[in-house]
Length: 499
Image (cartoon, rainbow, N blue to C red):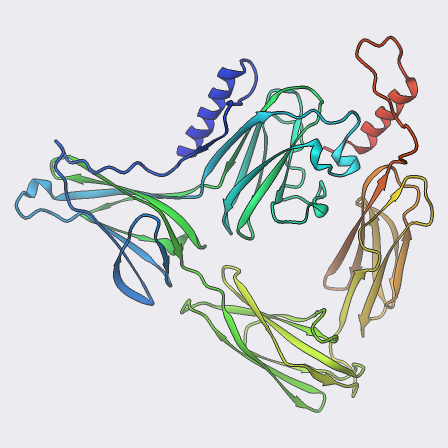
């Protein structure tokens, strides 16, 4: 409810400043969702209040204060309003409580008019053609919800991790992809954060019309309840992630008077990644007995394991097995060539997705008998690339490796359209990249087995010839109309405007 009220207030404020359009207050503001601290009883008399915590591995109780950071396995918060022995009418009948995490933050500004003819969904991102807003404090597991109000006809937004190399900020590869590029008012999008960090939001004025924007980022998550008596217990692990919470407690006395207390910005670390201490390899002919030791601060946590093989000393790894639930694995190396610098990597993953990895010492294997399993994967030999429109001999290629799984079906796509199918025994697959239109194009190789398919994608950007004037700008009062330019723009709009 609080989040809805804040968004409505932002909307009404914007409409007041820009009548008939959409919200855009003039100053960037962070909307504080922290409860106001108070301690009121009737005519001002005070009642003592205690908040403590305990966990499986720290029996406590330990006093809690604002801005504390608490580590423990299944932390419980106990809030107590002690009853009065002298004034029974002051005894507590019930407690209402609420706990909230995350933030709502609003940013406002003036839209930037891009250079004439610029279109990020065709030409790729040019950072100076968009307005950028940064939001800190994103936590792993946050459901990040974005709302973009604007008072022109069409403004889009693209979202990326702030610490990600901006050379990889492709228009379809952002955290919200094209959710916020729909011509809607407002534009909305969301994603679940798979890590902590800061995000940046690029705001693109698609219709080249002046205006303003109001961008709201909301990561709040709330819980509440009511209990009889003078003590309430909050189980912080039920958020299923490490979380920072603010609490609001309201106690009602036997006389109907209220006592309000708050606890602000306390971080609860309930979940810890499993740790692998050793990875041992024991050889018995072609067999390799792999075992490892795992510890976890979360007492009753369950784990599953992924096992990967490196034949180049740990530089690259291939998936050997997944979904393993025991701390051991038997690998039959028969059928492999001789490899002198092998390593095994074990990754332990818990029920909430926290993980850690460890690797073995280097060992060797040899080809002794038929292999009982299969490996197959592809890597992009050419990598992401670009070329000038009109140039020739541009290619995209993949190197395919297959062990004991021959032949294998494959498909090649350009911009999601299939251009080739075939079968491979494990070699280089190369496709022609000439003749593409100006803009960013996506090449994907799909390897297909009976059980699954694996994709590898590379991007090719076709750049305009800097020595040619493709299109010139004309003022709105110009009497002349360049028919060729109009046809060119119409064709670009028809082919590349993907909504």
